[in-house]
Image (cartoon, rainbow, N blue to C red; front, side, top):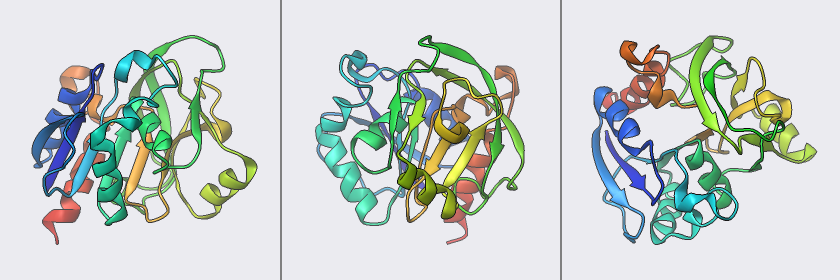
Length: 221
């Protein structure tokens, strides 16, 4: 599997993402946000951090970067994309995923390990788990409150596109949502950090199944 990790000014999880992908067997290329083209890759990862200092809405400025046009084209061609934390915000700002990420309900930055429930195994990202599994991923965000209107929420739930929910909702997200899938199930956006849960030295390895399952999809192809 070939993957690209986009780097924005303010990204701080780009190397974490690259390390997690490489450990699972991916060939990874780092791509600067001012580049206008992507190499031929299977997956584009949009990492966490504080792109452009979050000086507007989180992810809103990054969504206008030249590379995001290539990201949109990649997804429209059926390519895979993974957005984590700030990357999730970027995916909603580009319109690649529905909903929006708002200020945490408590109006405070939250940084801790959070219990999650896997809601579906029917995607390349989650097939390494069983629906109903409990996992623990770190979270670190100030604007992680996932918000969607009633129609969008019903669509996500009725089509099995909620990937993860929080065990103890840390930010006020509607229906405890921690991650959602695109209509074709090839794009995942999530606030928790699976790339920070792939090494025993970091406190847990629950994220390994996400990356191994994803890479395994292409090893079988």
